[in-house]
Image 1 (tube, rainbow, N blue to C red):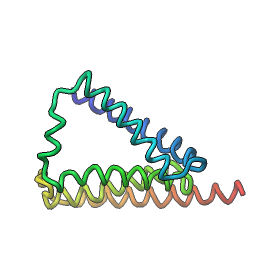
Image 2 (cartoon, one colour):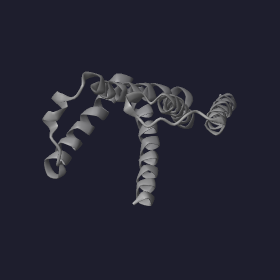
Image 3 (spheres, helix red, strand yellow):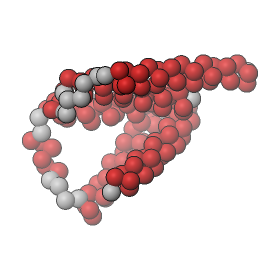
Image 4 (tube, one colour):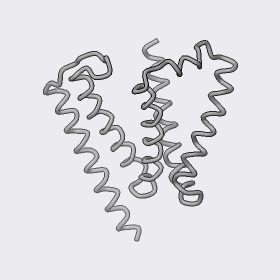
Length: 153
C-alpha cells in the first residue's frame, strides 16, 4: 500500500505542476482571482459529485470542528491564489520549488514543536542540511530562469 501511496502522490505532484502552468497562462486572460475562483468552483462541483457517490463521512461534522481547523481551507485558497500569481512571473519550476521549500520549512518547525497535535520530530543536522539544499536549489533555478528570460528578450 505504501508504494501505491507514493505513486498516487507522484501523480498528484505531476497534476499540480500541470495545473500551475495552465492556471498561470489562463490568469493572463481571465485574471488571477477569477482563475482561482474557477479552479475552486470546478473542484467544488467535482467533490460534490464524488461525495454523493463515494462519500462515507459526515459533511455536517464540519460545523462541529474547532474554528482554528477551518483555517486550513483559507490557507489552501491562499496557496492557489499565490501560485497562480507566481507562475507567469517566475515560471512553473521556481514556483513549485518555492512552494515545496515553504512546505518543508514550516513542516520541520511543526514537527519540531509538535504544533497542531502532530508527532514531535526534532530538527537535526540532516533535516537542516535538507532545508539548506532546497533553498540552494531554489536559488539556482530562479537564477537560471532569469538568465533564460534575458536570452529570450
